[in-house]
Image (tube, rainbow, N blue to C red; front, side, top):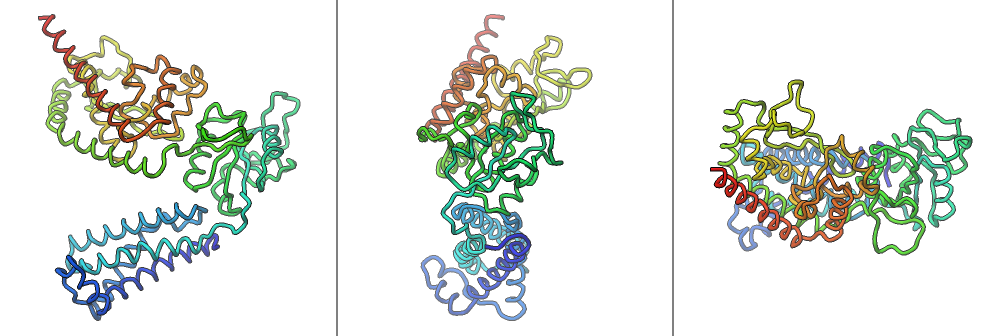
Length: 473
């Protein structure tokens, strides 16, 4: 297993050599003739390049493929399946780039037969190389590290955990305890206690390096009092590195756990409640719905844009920070429905002085939500999921619903189970119950039912608006 700069150099050189060899092999006359004889492919030219043309094809392929794999050159321990999947994704990125170059510039074009033949070769060779240079430790023991700010919690984990513990990682905050006299004042710069007996291995800011240096398989959380960034930043790091996140059963109030677990004291945190197939179908569903809706609604979008500009009450879009997965944030956009406050809009308070006729219509018909279809396309949101809350109100929601953070384990949605049952942020506990129920039951058919139910509600609201207009006349 390579580490550090040896891994970086080995991965770059390996990708470059494999790309060059692959082009050389698939461009050989024998391979071109063999592949060119297959059905459908026999329609493509089998002229193998020679001389300078062959050299240009090799150099172009090497540069593009090496560039496509930039995110994977940093040494990070990953499961074999995760590594294969990530490497194959980068192969497709490289192949699309090569196809695009050929489309726009014939001079540097890889023949279509060469590109098609290159695809299976790279999809096998390069992932195999990354797996080989980054093998998992041969030891069957689960190598774990404890992350937390609670000495008593760390001690409890040490006593009840059966695996191999490397040590503990501390955030840059003082250790806390219910007994102030028991607080340990002797801390190092990044929050660790050098005298703590369970092996201090570094501060939370070095968690990425610790994972690579010690080949960590699991991280066990033992926080007593931590902020959102520390807690969910740790979970996000575990997810990105493909290592298991665990916690003591006494600390499961704000997380999702594997419901199949028994009475074990150390339980798995359910970082990804949906399997790969569910995520794939959900993403395809999101892309299909968002792209189709944007296309169909494009005339409506133009009319709304023109209407807002004619009203002349500020920018077309309203931007607000909302909470994303693992407590991160993103910018949510809506069509503006209120006049800006004199000092700049900071909220969505429905002040009669700020209301506009067009804004009232957009809110009633839910057309103000259309810009979020773009957020779905770029991956910030899903069509269906827990509705993203205003980030600056999250603390209030947590105070009213202790397990509120369970909503943060999946991507937020445009609509959700809570929305079709009229559960709003005024009832955080009820809204949370619906959101967690959705997370546990999510499926493609469930998403479709929720979308149809939401469309029915929109149609009902539009019908109610028409009836009200008729009565007012």
